[in-house]
Amino acid sequence: MLLKELYILIKKEILLEWRQRYALSGIVLYLVCSVFLVYMAFGSANINAETWVTLFWIVMLFTAVNAVAKSFIQESRGLRLYHYTIASPYAIILSRMIYNVFLLAVLVLAGLPVFLIVLGNPVENLPLFIFAAAMGAISFATGFTMISGIASYASNAGTMMVILGFPVIIPVLLLLIKISKAAIELSSSGQTNDFIWTLVAINMITVTTSVLLFPYLWRAN
Amino acid sequence: MNWKKHWWKILGVLLIYFVLVAGFLADVPRLFILNETIRNLFFHVAIWFAMFVLLIVSVVYAIKYLGKGNPLDDIKSSEFANVGIFFGLLGILTGSVWAKFTWGDWWVNDPKLNATSISMLIYLAYFILRASIENPQAKGRISAVYNIFAFAAAIPLIFILPRLTDSLHPGNGGNPGFNNYDLDNSLRRIFYPSILGYTLLGIWFAGIRIRLQKLKEKLNDLELNK
Amino acid sequence: MKKLLHYTSILLTLLLTSITGLLAQVTTESTQHVEMADTFRSEGKIYVVVLVAVVLFSGFTLFMVLTERKIARLEKTFKDLKGNADK
Image (cartoon, rainbow over all chains, first blue to last red; front, side, top):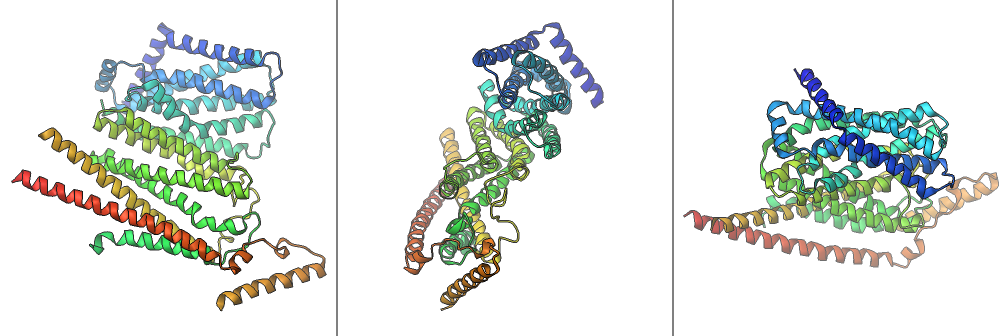
């Protein structure tokens, strides 16, 4: 039953998005503009590897916040009540999370080539970096979906999303940057496995807590 | 003076008196870099531990509130978070002063410091969230959810990340440490009572704030019912 | 008396270890002298520090007790008010 609900909900999100690609195109535009802004700011000066990685993750972070904000915040109250009556809270939160994972995976894996082309390629270990980027997409999606849900009940939802989300995501961001640094061979790779496993653990904790807590949030409807 | 009701407050005060006297007069291990400031273990570090206890109490009440919906639990959850953050602020200030004298700078790029500033940000966000929701039930429910979520997702990291990386803090990265064989009994004898003392004081603060809040609500009810 | 014994024993140990260290031409960290506030303490100034701390904390405790009493009085007033309203 849950699986069927999940499937339908995810399909609905993807269909809605595909029909009028407002959100997707808006966010892709945001991403490209940010990269361009970085390019303009640094000009022809060669960016060193460390700066490159940091810029990449900052741009990805803001893009992710924008992308995930759409899941709960831009939903009208009537539509939310309707969803409340027809689907279980587990299905709602899981479907939004999975959809956001896909969305962010597309954005991050599209953003990476843009970065590489516009700002040069300091990445030595590309498979590891792509892996780190994918992990980043998953981590941002799981973390921000729940935050987006919480923020949607506050009066100034967009700002709340940032205020609530950033402190919680900073540890994740730190780990991602450390793994990326290993990918550009700036630091010893001995600890990289530790970082990756910690990231996986955090993701599992985030998903579990979100799924456990979301029904209580949903009841506030 | 109802002893049964107030004994733990008196215990807290007595413990801190003990720590103030013993903390300065007792003998301490002689370690490099730290010298005499190792005594800060009884003050600065104890406050962090007490803060952690208070924040755990806050999360527990948040969970209770989600379970039963009793508004008193929400008040308790938020006031314990309040006092917890106050202790955290004191911890940061005292840590900063300690840092200036042992590491040479008021603030350094150190994982433990980063982790603590992140947790401060998280709880500040908690208070902003509470302020931005009008409806009391929604306020309680949503802030409880955020309290639990943020605690589960980020606070445990304070203990994990510093272990994974080098840190200036004692015990990590080559500094004389406060690990098991260094924290000898002479320090433990004062350190543990200090944690207990600060925790009891924190609970006393929180208790007063909670009672004040309850009185405010009663006043509101009276005004509304006139 | 016990304190004096303590201090002399520490000084003696340090002296002995440093001498043996020099003789054996092996220097470990424990033979070096760690600066502590020994002179400060021997002049009795440490008691001033303790006294200041105790006074400050007493002031704070007094404040807490007064606040506690104030709130207890307020709570009692409310209880009485409520009792009157229920009648």
